[in-house]
Image (tube, rainbow, N blue to C red; front, side, top):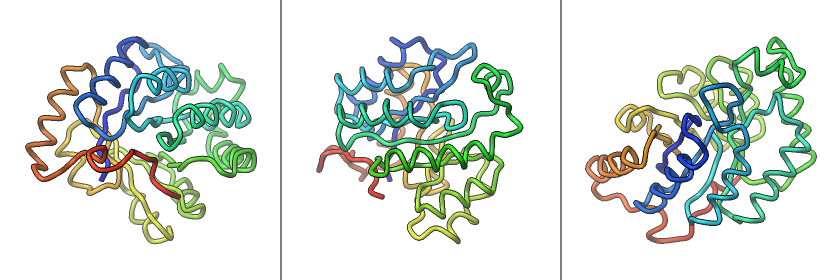
Length: 234
């Protein structure tokens, strides 16, 4: 199991960089940042932010999530392919549809079409970037997204309190991999995920979380103790 920290983007960019630096320093496996365009968030350009972090760390980098609905798949391919070249073997993507009608409107889309946009834009991204790093699909309420992830042998990401589609996904996927976003370590560990991301708001939070990890899993070693970090294989 990979264990990391994530932020939805409530901090300013410098604050998010500080989170990543501390996560890297103490030994977490992964740092992830969500993409949001509405206040109070400051994470509208995660690829740029992660590229800056990549230059200053050795930690694996991901998103939590990248909006597959309101971004042009060609732009996503260009930005994240560049990130992958700058940090080879250290990046992957968590794709999500978003849930804010106002944000959809800012990008010329309508939230009512979020599900078909997800499926269509994922197909376009896959065609444009067939050798992309590992991809996860985030879902809170749509069984169709669990089906999409299983059909393409991608991972499924869920919130710790919204896991109703996990069994459906596991039943269909050839190589199921589950990611969990949690507010607390114990909440996430109970689901035995392949990747667990715990929310952190400050470097002090990251320090405390790492202490909790070492207490809860005393025999655990960071993946960086024995081998270079890589995204999960497809």
